Image (cartoon, helix red, strand yellow):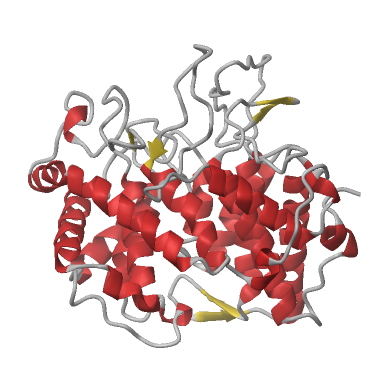
Length: 425
C-alpha cells in the first residue's frame, strides 16, 4: 500500500468532507475493504434485503468484483487485485462446461437462460442465485479478457497456469461465437445489441491480439498472443460490429452511461468518438447528483418512488466522467479513425484536467458524511445500496488519478487548494 495511505490517520469522529484529499481516498478505501470477502470478491453493497423490499445486494456480481478491485491497482495493491481475478477465474471454472457448450451451440437468449454464465453468484458457495433474468452480458467477458491480459503484460503472468490459459481460450471461443450479437448489456436489460458490450469484447480481444494498439501502456512488449491466440478475423469482425452501432449505444438508446467504458478502461474508440460520447452523456444524462444511465431509465432502486418524469442519478457516473477526462489529460496524443496520431497541446490537456477536477468535486459533494458513494439518488432521496462497491472503487481511482497527474506535472495540473484540503467548502 502506498506510503501516503499507510501513514494517513483517519479520525472516526470527523466528517469525510473535512479531511484532506489523501485521507479521503484512504477512508474510501477502508469502506471498499469492508465489502471485500476473504476469497477476494466484493459484495455489491451491504444491503441484505431482510426488510423484504427487494433483491439482496450482498452477493457477487462478476462485473462488480472486477471493477471494485480495480482500485487496488491505482493504490499499488496488485496482490489483492490478482487475488480477485483468481476468484473470477474460479467462478468461470465452476461454469466451465456452460462456457464450452455455448461456444459451440448458441443457447436461446429467452428460453435457455440457464445455459449461460450467471452474472451473479453466492459469495461463499459461488453457486447461481437465479437464472430468471438476463445473465448473458458480454461486457463481463470483455472486461475479464482485457484486464487479465493487461496484468500479464505488466509482469503478473506467473500467477496464471496452463489450466487457466485453457479456460481463457474457451472464453475466447465463447466470445467469438456470440460476442457481437444481442446481449443484456451492463444494466442487465434487453436483449439488444449494445456498443458498450461490443467495445468491451473488442477491447478484450485486442489486448491479446495487440499489433501495437495498446503498446503505449507498457514499458516493454510482452507477446501474450501465443498463450491465447486471437485471429485478425475476430478483430475485424469486432471493429465492423462496433462501427455499425456507434455513436448509439443500441437501437433503443441514442447514448448510455455504459459507453464511457469505451473511453476507460478500454480506450477502444478514436478521439472524435470519445468526445462525442462525453458530449452526449454530459448534455443528455448529467444531473446534479449523478449521471442517469440512459434516457427514460425507469429503475430507481427498491424503496424509492419516482415522481412523474423523474429518473435516478448515479454518482458512479460522476467518477467515471472524471476518470475519462483524466485519461484525456494524461497523454499528449490520441488517435483518429485511421489510427493516426492526434497531438494535444497543454492548453487542451489542462482543460481536460480541470473538467476531471470539476466532476470529482461534484462526486464528493454527494457522498455521505462517512465517505460512502450511494448507488443512486432519486431527487434528494438516496438509494439503499449504499455504499456501492464499484462506485466506491471509482471514487478512489478518480481521486488517485488526479493526485498522480498533479504530482507528475505540477506546473500544468494544479489541484485547487479547496480540493486538497477538503471536498466541500
